[in-house]
Length: 222
Image (cartoon, rainbow, N blue to C red; front, side, top):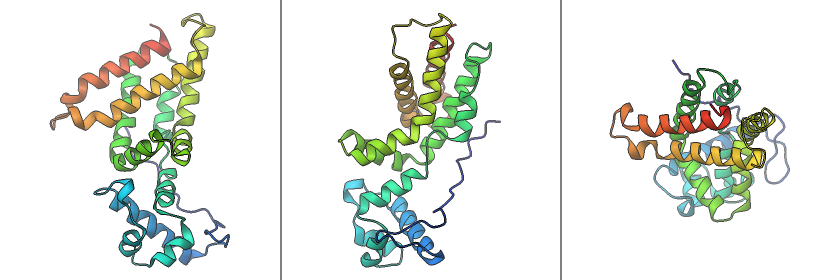
């Protein structure tokens, strides 16, 4: 069975500081946690643009004044939540660390896509909010998106470079750009799984298998 369990949240590291540069104690860390959790809950029904500090504070059972001790605005707390959820999860990275020339590479590629999609769907509202803000040009969300996917992007880039070295792939392709194209495909498949599903796993089997074939043949050139 594929392990699609999300990575464990580690919370705020010891010595983390609030907006005023003050080291947070246990109470401060708990308050900050409540604000993040309240924001994530509100995003289930609201867009990023519609989030209001007062509503976040109320749901977290605190005040706007307290909110501003930990975050500068509603977007800032969303970014904090996003940074806890890197898409390059240990499960995904373990599946990406394979010999892409192996006989069973298509099955492994399909496993990778299914684990990736399961994690995406579990946190879909956060990822959707992040991507929309990034596509609108918000530099903070652009960087958060890149930070989230960078390890997997690097792994795919290395696989492309290896295929080029073995003459399994044209050397006039840019390895990083090719890896980026694969990531874009995988992310889109993950984001639209529910769109094509009507309640049965077989409903989204086709797109997932097709994307896995593209991934396996591109990196393995079989």
